Length: 247
Image 1 (tube, rainbow, N blue to C red):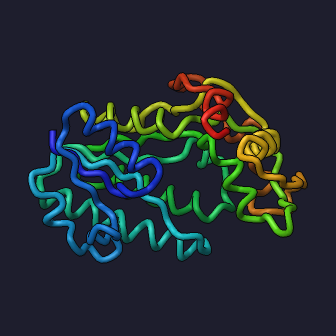
Image 2: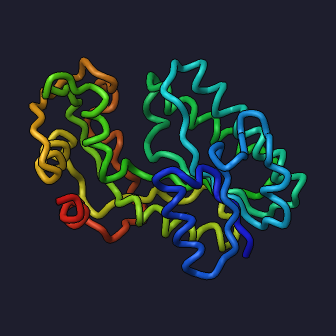
């Protein structure tokens, strides 16, 4: 198949490209750095010529709620319109498991707008809600770290390996549209503070962690809120297995 991947130079996008090309598919890469801009639609017509399926693994800039919703909304409208013009038969969106239970997070608001537009759009679709990635904890501490000290919320998550997410996206993109897919997650729950500590240790970084809700995440994300649904598809790679690759 000829499949386009939006966000092709990002973490999940690049792994999805690799998985699809390994299986013999013709992959079109969509990224601003490659001359295709979802915010304006520039380059989309050429990028989607002859494409049968599109995988949207894009991310958005850190911004306020209104700006984030506007960014994701504009990019998604442009991509869906280009899909329709090109005759794309399947639009696959990578989303976030459990985000409907959380109101105050700007990024989640933007992702909900993406989901709304895709579900109401003209192209047959599959939305794949994934839990947080294995590298999420270390990324969170990098946002707040100052002078070797970082604040981090004591979230309970069930993290998934980025490579496993990419394999699932590649599988879904080559199949028939399924609407809302089941949650995809790693095999076991983890405490975010412990994940951050162990990741930093594995990478040889000394960071003092201060667990607190006075950070980018609020108490409405506590407890089981971010865990996958009961019918979730569990990917095989454990956090310990992923951690071994970070040493």
